Image (tube, rainbow, N blue to C red; front, side, top):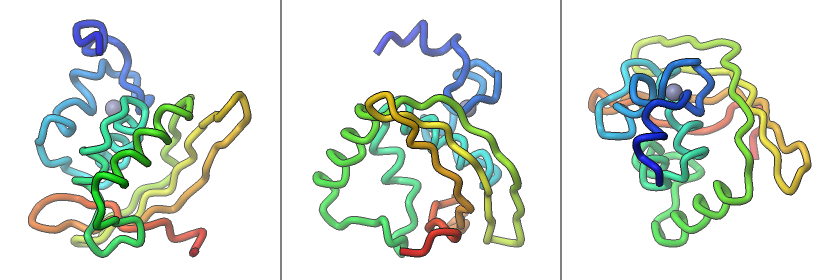
Length: 140
Ligand SMILES: [Zn+2]
């Protein structure tokens, strides 16, 4: 990874801020203050291929949680490699105590085809850290 270049270029989450002043502190271990920040940082982590961050910010009760972290990590890496992260738009974010929802659209392409998603995500704060639980609008 070209670190110096990465730090000054715009954050992949689409905030318009440089990466170093946006999602990097969360990727380096600081606790995101809001669920929206966590959501943005997870999108940026997908774009930057940071599977360990995605695993660390997934709630253990999430349907996406996998006990085999090696397989999980490889799956996340493959998704990041095969996907172009075109942009993120946060449509709504609400927090009530330690529960939050963030509604967003993520512009993605895979093999040149549109693979964008629209999701209302559920987050929970555990020990002061926001964690991703699941999508609420497309139950599987
Ligand atoms: Zn960011």
